Image (cartoon, rainbow, N blue to C red; front, side, top):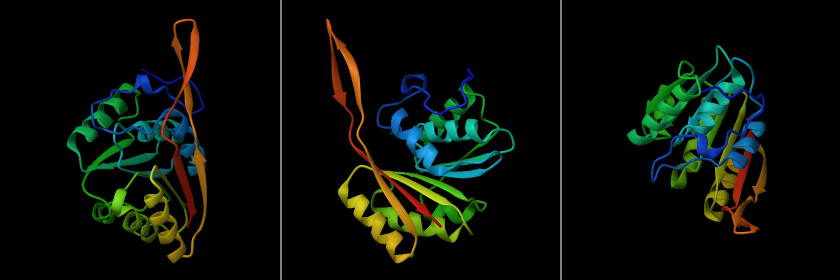
Length: 195
C-alpha cells in the first residue's frame, strides 16, 4: 500500500495493531511530526516505536535517502513496525533497533531529530541521552501524565534548552443510530525542545 498524500495523518485503522502495543494516534501524530520539522533525507530516532506509526509517516515525509531508527525493547512492537513499514513501502528506510532506552541510544548514529513516545520513568534520561547525541536538533516527546510532563520539563530546564508544551484534546465522532456522538481520546502533552 502506498500513502498518496503529501501530508501526515494516515488513519489509525490502516496500521496493523496488536493488543498492548501502543500507537500514537493520527491527530497527535500529525502535530508531533509537524513539530519535528523533518527534512528530506533526514535522520530520526523514534524511541518507543510501538506499532511504528511515527516511524512510517516520518520515513514517508523524509523520502528517499532518509533513515528512521525505530527503537523498542518489545519484540512484538518491532515486528509490527516492520510489517507496517513494509505495508507502506518504507522498509528500506526504517531500521529496527531492539533495546532499552536510554542505553541503546549510544549505539546509534547521531541524529538531529528524536521522537519519544512516552518514556515513563526513563524520560529525563532519554532526553539527556538524545541531547548528548546531537549537535543541533529537535526532540519531540508525547506524554499523557502530569508526572511525565513535570519530569520532562525539569530535565529540559536542567539542560538549559528552550522548549514548548502543547496539549492536544481529540474527540472523534461515532455514529449511534441517527446521531453522531463525540468520543474523547486521552489528552496528550506534546513537548518540543530545541537543542
